Amino acid sequence: MEYQTPKSRCSLCDSEFTRQGLTRHIKSCLTKHLQKPSKAKPRNLLYLNICDSFNPDYFLHLLIVGNSTLKNLDVFLRDIWLECCGHMSSFSRQRYGDEINMKHKVEDIFIPGVELIYQYDFGSTTELSIKAVDNYHGATDGNKKVQIITRNAQPIISCDECGVKPAAQICCECQWDEKGWLCEECSQTHGCDDEMFLPVVNSPRTGVCGYTGD
Image 1 (tube, helix red, strand yellow):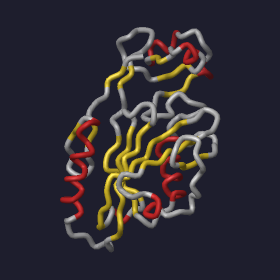
Image 2 (cartoon, rainbow, N blue to C red):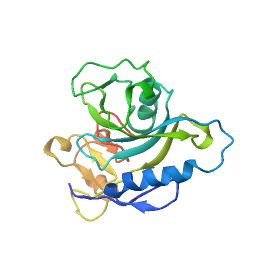
Image 3 (cartoon, helix red, strand yellow):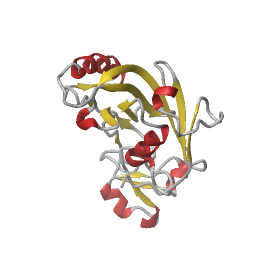
């Protein structure tokens, strides 16, 4: 499987950056953005950098209100990236470490430099690394609990059969042989049954369990 990683867009200034350049830019851009007048009451905010533990090309940069709970963050991650079959999830300080109670406020757990492991589904596990980058004082856009600053642009993954067009479907049967990424045209002539297909979506859980991105 070969893929390209397009640049991602900062929602604060509409500029595009590679993954490597985003954190430095966002810290500077956030400082300027939060200085703008707002009718919302300023609150403690945390800047979190979240990525797939095994493929950092899937990432989210977020502002989250400090008095939000880990459960609020869990619900957000499920909604945007993970939820398929109601699996269990957990936060911990290290892989397979003791679980952290999700009733805790994020500002009591995350201080700049702290990194947690988040796992969704203890069978076909999707694991995320969540790092607290910095603290800010201000208001999120729309007074939301969680504001997305940027997320990765969807990787362009080549079809395993024609090698030319981008994959749009994944054959879960062929994935066992590290194949099965198919463009729409090749998926029409692929030998496996249609019920084995899952759509290619912009999530580290693409192709896993029953995840469709809905």
